[in-house]
Amino acid sequence: MGQIHTAGPNEALVLSGGCVGSENKRTVVGGYGWSCLCFTDVQRLSLEVMTLNPKCEQVETAKGVALTVTGVAQVKVITERELLSTACEQFLSKSVAQIENIILQTLEGHLRAILGTLTVEEIYQDREVFANNVRDVASPDVGRMGIEILSFTIKDITDKVDYLDSLGKAQTAAIKRDAAIGVAEAERDAGIKKAEAERERLDVKYSADTAIADSRRAYELAKASFDQEVNTKKADAELAYELNAAKMKQKIRSEEIEIEVVERRKLIDVEEQEILRKDKELISTVRAPAEAESFKVETLAQGRSTQRVLQAQAEAEKIKAVGSAEASAIEAIGKAEAERMRQKASAYKQYGDAAMMQLVLESLPKIAAEVAAPLAKTEEIVMVSGGAGTSGSRMTSEVTQLISQLPPAVQALTGVDLSKTLSKIPGAETVR
Image 1 (tube, rainbow, N blue to C red):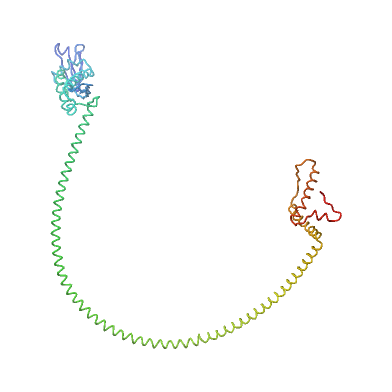
Image 2: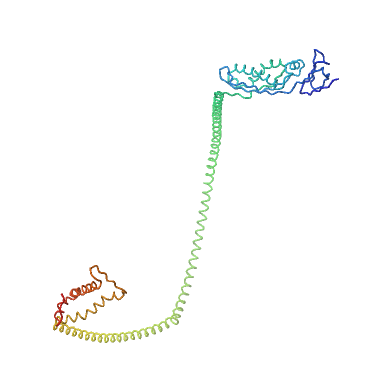
């Protein structure tokens, strides 16, 4: 009994053992094969592309600069019968990961070896040449294992000392410098070409302007000559016309003046007649009524003036009579008052101090009334004494003290010694 096995185009089917031959093996790609049960060994090998990322860290280059290079390689098993048989011998029992690891180690070894023979500048500036070198060196070794390198490229190049950055900056600066120089040279050349073109344009322009100016000058000269001749003829014609016009205007003006004289004479006659008419009209309508009104107004004014004069005279006589009467009354009153004062002075002189005492006594009530006038508005009086004794004795002593100050006040006001005058009254005694 046996079994049929199939294989797709992406794998190789390897049959060995019974039914195949003790020393032979059969490889099938994209087909089928027959195996005998318990006598035939059936194995498979992947033919798909394997992507590898070989990486060499801190590998010194030809000048001792340590670089880290990462590459990308695409490899697969070769399908030619002899090489496929070789690959089967080496990788048939291994997994895809193990196969990738073997090839990766081989590529990294060759990559490391080639890095040591090149400088950083060679590696950095021409990565394609570097990648081709690695592929060319590694292809024979992996080819002997039945593996084909489809492609190999450099993915990344780095270092830890910023050598590449410095190299890039230097190259960038050099490129910028070359670019600036190229721009400056181009601008210079463009400026030169532009200046030359401008000069040629101005030469042509000035030549054309000169030719135009010459033509214009000739035209102006010819035109001026023609204009002069035309203007001369025109001036002669205009002068003759103006002379004829002036003569005609003079004749017309003479006729107009004669007409104006006649018109003015007629107007003068008309105005004289109008003046006579208006004079008569004014006499009848204005002058006669005005004279009548003037006479009326004059007569009324004289009447009013006479009336006012008579009224003023009567008023003056009245004021004079009233003034005389008032003066006589004032004179009589003054004489009576003077006589009364004279008699009072004579009486005071005759009675002396007694009269003065009477005058003082008559005045005391008025003085007391004036002094007591502010107290009339007082509702309550509180007497405060700081001396010793009862309140009644203090009140009595203070009232007595107040009354004792009255004579000096009267003497100061009137000049009369009230105590001395009272002592002269029969039965009166002065308290000390």
